[in-house]
Amino acid sequence: MAKIKITQTGSPIRRHKTQRATLVGLGLNKMHRTVEVEATPEVLGQVRKVAHLLKVED
Image (cartoon, rainbow, N blue to C red; front, top):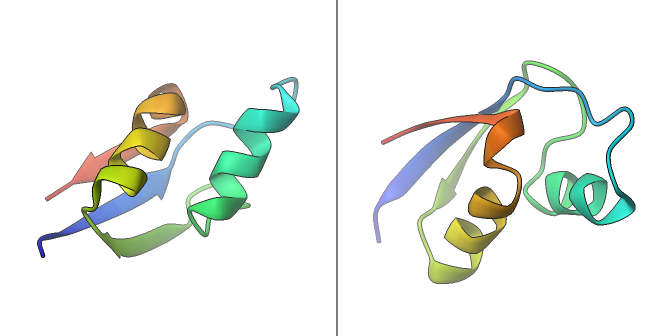
């Protein structure tokens, strides 16, 4: 599968609990952290949910 690089650019402060939990599920919990994950449909759905807090690269 293809891998994508995700960087957290937005703060989870004043966000819903579900959005915070989604960031933790992606392996992000602090600003400017970067993770590389496989581009599965589940991960892409999580990215779409909190896209306003992330920067995604191929």
